[in-house]
Image (cartoon, helix red, strand yellow):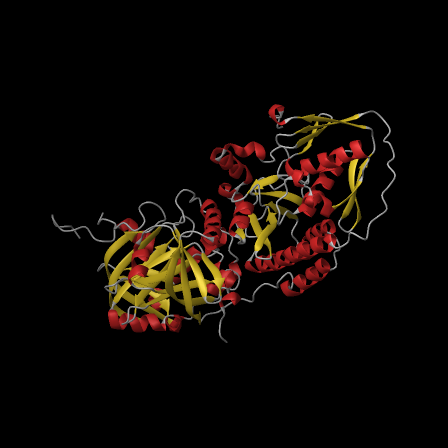
Amino acid sequence: MSKMQGEPAPLLSPALTAFMQQGLSISLASRDIRHVPSLTRCLACRVLDDATVVLFLLREQALDLLRDLQKCRRLAVVFSRPLTHQTIQIKGELVEVRPCEAEEHPLIERQLTRIREELVGMGFPDTMLRTFFQVVWENVDAVRFLPDAVFEQTPGPRAGHRMENVP
Amino acid sequence: MTVRLDMIRGCLEGVIPCALATCDATGEPNITYVSQMTYIDNEHVGLSFQFFNKTRENILANPHVTAYVIHPDTAARYRLALLYLRTEAEGALFQSMKAKLAGIASHTGMSGVFRLQGADVYRVLDIEQVPGATVAAPARPRNGLSTVRRLSLRIANCTDLSSLLDQTLADLEDDLDIHYSMVLMLDQQAQKLFTVASRGYQASGVGSEIPLGCGVIGVAAEHQTPIRINHMTSEYSYSLAMRNQAMADGDLKLLETAIPFPGLTEPHSQLAVPILSAGSVRGVLYVESPEDLRFTYDDEDALVSIAVQLGLATLGLQQTGECQDEDEAPPQAIMPGAGPLLVVRHYAGDHSLFIEEDYLIKGVAGAILWRLLQGYVNEQRTDYSNRELRLDRSLGLPDIDDNLEARLILLQRRLAERSHCLRIEKTGRGRFRLVVLRPVRLVDVPRDDSTVTP
């Protein structure tokens, strides 16, 4: 698809999209109606062509967060690569929560294998990691959201800076 | 089962970073990863405030925080409901978190990036175990409580300070698998700590000194708090501490620098625990290891308990020693020493003592030995009581907490290491004897000429 002149660059650059889907440590937060935060870990991420992002998580680990998302619809998600500490945070608005589909299983498995292998390389015990990343497929939900801001969060002087829409 | 914070302290060591969710005044959530969460007690944790970031802004507007921690051995996950209470920018908690952060920063290549501005204190409102598979926790190498019981009983059975110190350090090796350890006592007047016993090092380092507030040991003593670092960091190294001290004040010449500090050059784990009694710090029990992450919260608990026993036992032995004046050993007839003349030189400026050309000691310990040698040469005296020395104003001992017994042990050990002709022997509780094996000539160099410091 050719871009029209003057059209803003997409919020998620190709490099960022690749980073987010490589198999990372992912945490997702929302908050309840009294502004008390809820928080869970995610398994994997998928960036769709319509610029929405899908996060996969284990439903029974995220009951509070799923309830809060339905009410307030705002969310924050952090993607971090343990080996390099490279970290970004995305803020966005919930589009939908739905059960994970079978065709998405290989993508999730691939990302989980990548992060597990990286952590084993860093000295974490494989048995612990396999347990930690264990997936019961019927328990996996997909949270789709529309990003509206991206922040640099790698520890250092630029941490917290809003990332410009660089293609 | 209710989860108590002290049951999940393994999650807080920073092996796996902890995720924190906050929410601003408009309701916008935010997440950050933090490298350490500090266990304060079962109702409170400390988090490091390093940058004025979004999390900082949020907790000041809305104190509710949710944290997600993972146990690095079992994969168990916990969600903590926290409430921000206050920020401490100085004091014991701040210092202990600052030291820990220095270790993490250096380990993760973030030295110069991580800098503690404050210790944020949070109340733990709730701990929820997140559903999910876990692996069995690895078997513990020992039962900490029964180890502390065993060591406490041995401490209670020691009858003098010297064996108390040696026995305790030997027990740390046998029962807690800690191979490098030392005890330093506080010289309150001079604001420094002196090494009185050590174990595991090539040279004992007895007599070496550390200024109060310097390095892991000095900070533990100054702030009366355990300091535990789980990774190698030069920020708390002995050499840097001494260099900073030298820059901070010109009084380094008063510090014992001729006797090298015995510690490891690059310790990857360090734990310094203050020895407290009667409400004040008497010294520091210090252990270290070449391995990362060697000392856990459980080790810290054990060492703190042992240090408390050491403090009480030290105080008790001092009081017992004072009450034993009637239990005197008969004075020995002085046997004139044989062999060539032994020249002992005393520099009055800093009480440094040289046996022939060899440096022995300075400071209060130097003054004590000089006093004993003068008694030997001028009055043919060899036998003394601790009480007599304690009352001798010329030694410059402080009125309270003089740590005299510790100084005598230091002197006794230093002589054993450095001289074949002079030694100090215990002759009973609170009593000792100077043994001189060669004829002695004393040379006193007055204060004005005594700028010689090795």
